[in-house]
Length: 233
Ligand code: AMP
Image (cartoon, rainbow, N blue to C red):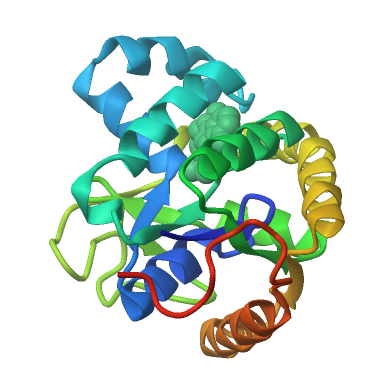
């Protein structure tokens, strides 16, 4: 089972890059934010629990998040592994993930960290629009829709996420940068961290991620206890 973690603050481009990397590698793309939003939309118990935290720009508690992630990882499309997007967001989640993977004789192959300065993040998030029907992402700067205010793919209206509004964005960034730094330090310690400049174009960042992944695989110590190398079955 290949587990690749994509790290970065909100607005760093994790979602775009994770979807692409997962498709390229034939792995599942698991975005905890998307899982929470789907639960909120479906009105599940989990969605009700998560909603208050999400609307405030706060992190959902680790136990709730971890349970949801592990259930998703157990689904058939993730049997070969996954690119994790938006998880882990705290050191506790990172440690719990390592424990859960160790029990399956697996480990995190690489933690790819998209670095983007705060002023760039604020500008990007203020200009992030998603389609109401399916969550396709647009921005006037990087990916403008062909018809203003409408999704190219399904024609549904483009809206801002409640937690992308300016008053919430600053709170989200402030609350998430501290825990993110701890997660980065954790993976630095376990030796799987790779830093990538996330300010470049989508294509350039995608290429840098693939290169970093190649070097992460090459650099993985034989004694790490993670999977033994070579492609996943
Ligand atoms: P995202 O789409 O990744 O920005 O996530 C949206 C919101 O979902 C976050 O602001 C959190 O409230 C919640 N969330 C997503 N992933 C996690 C996580 N790993 N831990 C805690 N909360 C999360």
